[in-house]
Image (cartoon, rainbow, N blue to C red):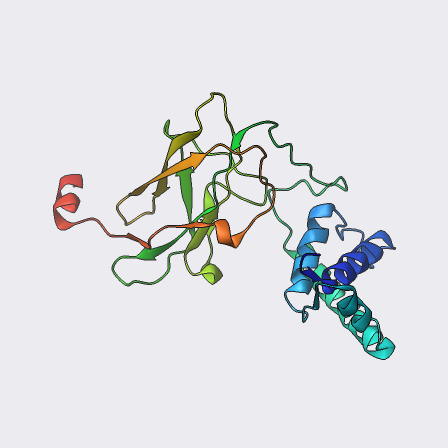
Length: 240
């Protein structure tokens, strides 16, 4: 048995139960699958996990009935709190239909490109940059497709993420018998008052039999910190 967090089961079932029941007082409350996942993440990030790896752990978690009732009450309260917040700030790039999003992954041998993560700072102040977007481009200068709508390219930088950007690209179907392939990507960022940033990334990847559909921080390819600098005085004079 792999490590399992029992709170995930309780949170997921509670979210589905509340979402499938009558909606709260306003008809505009969303019950789509994406909002369900967002609310579940909101709750799990605020609840103490309960990890088990055996029947003994599961049995122990069931012993204290009063404690279990209190946990359930806390989960219900946090689900309602999270639902209100998520509903007020719905993801703008989803249609929020009741149908669960389906990711169609390629069959057969593929190249699973690891998630690519980095941070962007102001070269003059060393402060994290926000209010702009970072792009991941392929060899042809085109935007690289992402795994699904939760992973954006360009990736917007917001104030509370400390200049961090991350891309999880869609698997690339292996169309030849080569056991490995060299991928070249370009990280690009542009902002008014700064020189354009271009950072090239090369990844040599082996063919795998199956497309990976589970995100793992252990697989993340971390880039060195990057900096945007204002144009030099010579560049300013040339632009005049």
